[in-house]
Image (cartoon, rainbow, N blue to C red; front, side, top):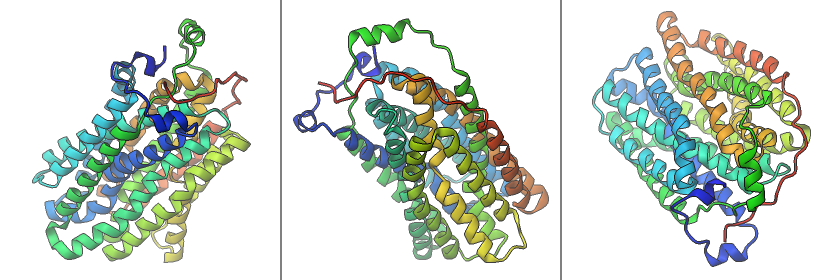
Length: 420
């Protein structure tokens, strides 16, 4: 039986959703807002807040890396817990509770006075982010078939881009108005925004229709082995987690501390990443629907490799930094988009949540290690150039890993619809 069938907390489908066969796009829109909140505000806004927060609390590069790593450790723990919890409750209650956790911990981060408090609270924020993202993407995979799954996941992923645009504009403005305590006000505003999204998710999210009993029985009897492709995707996702976490955590700090950019200018750079990333999920998701997941991932990792290389070039003129931001932004959220579509292709939409959780564990390991290692390298060398160069080399390795991916075996996909 599917997750919806086992849930003890299912709510009846409202009449408009019963009458409207395209309710799945309401799920996507709600997913976009959920990703906006849990990842865009809960995680990616840190890169913009970090310079002023570090100045206010006296954090070293290594300490900054520790804060980022704490968040990713919390995310990793959520990856392990989200599947079993969602199997008991259904995705909706878990997503709503996780968003509430993200909101509450962000509000408390605004009052933190020490590195220890930041680490504990931001780890809990990471747990809430993971416990929102994994079931949300799995839920979308169950509402869509293989021909539209990448596009749907892509539209959900652009929520992070909207949040980056907002934080790149909002945080410098708050800092100008509030001075040294501006970073605390920023956390308060962001936490309140996440609370609003949690309320909307509670109102709008629904499970898709439960599959026929015969189909459910067939899946229950099928073996739960991991196809070779899932392991390949997991390794590539781990590399992505390691490399992108370095970039999003430290690119703004690098621009402000090492390149002498004013915070407002660095904020415009960060907003540019967000604007460009609005294209990444839908464009690369749809491209992978048409040209294959391997082609899409190869192209994305190639663009990111070039972006990391340009960020590593400390003596390069500013136009090359613009190009670095552009390359990263245009491909930013396409990897998670393609990953959820790819695992659903290989294991079926009913097992997509479990398989996506499995590969997200590898992703989590990568993003835990990335900021910690990059922060230590920067602490010793006085620059993030070596860290960005390391990220570029690993992106090249990811291209080789993705070349091992083979197309999935053809499978019958049952149409999805709203639960009755």
